[in-house]
Image (cartoon, rainbow, N blue to C red; front, side, top):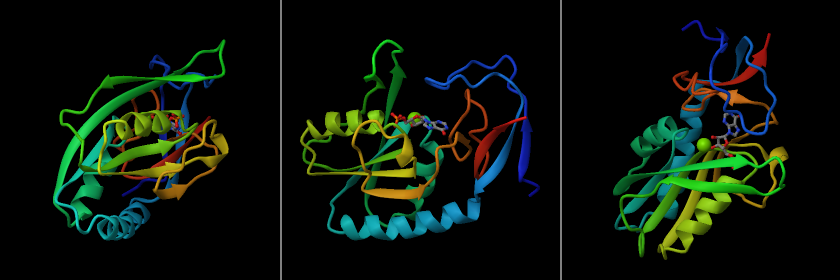
Length: 199
Ligand code: IMP
Ligand code: MG
């Protein structure tokens, strides 16, 4: 497949990059993590998750919409465990007049998690506000075990203390797309993780 540099033109696209002055101008995407490297990493992570939950009667795998939809699809197909899948949508936004971030739950879980084993699946941990808020919220519902996994982690961007139990890849402070992750809702369907570079 001829991926490597993918030219994009986002003129007119809604600006959704939080707290960021990225302009609406053409950009290219430089591959950062290949589809093959992601697949290999997910296999290794699945073995660790199976070991942690080997005695579970059922693991509720919770995907954070929308960015985790590709990751959760690949991850659950690697897990040799009895699982259920549920989704939660959170939206975080910055208030320019305050330093704290507020996280809103836009769509809650369909099922109860009290007494259940739960694995929360996120695409990227950036400032940490989303996962800190979501894991605190879900922990208050009394799950038997609550673990978290993020495909990507940008530790340099952290504003609140949060560390996922499993991380796919630590990456530098760059804006990335692909493998479910978007820029203004674009590029979620790229099979690899790429870095946005404005031209
Ligand atoms: P946090 O609350 O700052 O940790 O935000 C995490 C969320 O911000 C992720 O689930 C993504 O939706 C979004 N995000 C953070 N970094 C990027 C990026 O590089 N590309 C696209 N979305 C990102
Ligand atoms: Mg997200």
